[in-house]
Length: 463
Image (cartoon, rainbow, N blue to C red; front, side, top):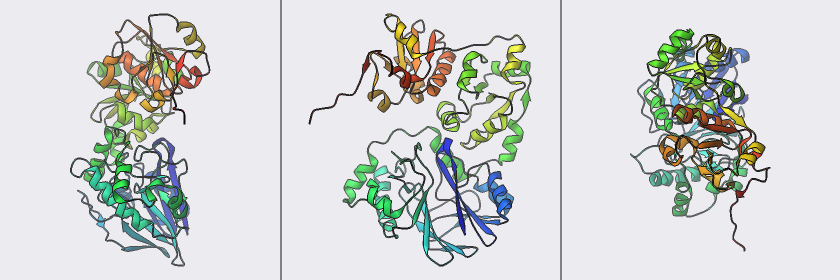
């Protein structure tokens, strides 16, 4: 028997590969199904089942393509309705994988169909629990992502009852959640990607003995606004999607420079996925920067509309990676990539733009001038933990909504985030909106905080 966690850091997502005696099952696969087929071939096993814990909101599952390619059965728990063939399992129903058994535990709360799967080893002992977004390390799934049909309070009420069921499991049962730190599917996930029921019973705030009303209040408060693409991804997972092979064939088209320029004039968005250092030195005017070296797919889903027509500029050989990672969050409207990359654009003699970046020491020298404005694009909580005196906080994901908080386009703008990635995204977006007089700060707040630039820190009351 073996269980392998397949963790994808940029999405904070964990899929699982279970195999025994020539048979295998996959839990919560990503859209790029090829990796699971390759793993099955490597292990010499046949994928028999694909278990889905719920309709994922933060990524498009690979279940439909994987089932099509392997003949495996897609399994969901109770209260599931889809527009494609699946098997709806009943509470306590068991499935055989070699000499293992997987038991269905319906655990609504994150969503109505949310289900955990309890794996029994070859000796019939309860071994591990695949918890999906019901139970994380140190947290639980947020109850507000299902939509207006059911209130977050009602979903939290159901979550309370579901957790009581899980608390009956032995302490030694391993907890394998669908997400780790950084995921927006919970409020504050722990740094580990797995745990045990015993540890979670002791340390997870949501598993402590409190009245149901207090529990509901705890898990419905302090919830940030979910990324805009979450509802769309949940719908895609419920309704179905185009085969990934079809998306790849359409998207991986090399577009010559002149045709690329014509497409831009028609309104197609240029997405530049190179790293910050290359982007700042030159890019196609109007490009949106979201580098593959960051949480690429999440930022694509946050910054761009899912229906946008998109052309890519990538580092050589990175075209396929960019398309796959966008498809993971349902972005399928890539119409091609710049043939020869940005160098081909520059060598053709066409105009290009740049972002000027400076270090924190240079910002310190410029700070005394009256005509500069510092724009801090970090989250509100980051800003409140410490910021430059007078800095304007415009959170990157809210830039479109809060653009009126940034002064006129003739002002000298100095853009920073925590480390440098988000500020380059923001700089590209501001350039698109006509803010040309701006500078990006290398190293962001991490570097700024090491200078003697005046800062405001949180005030703590004396005890």
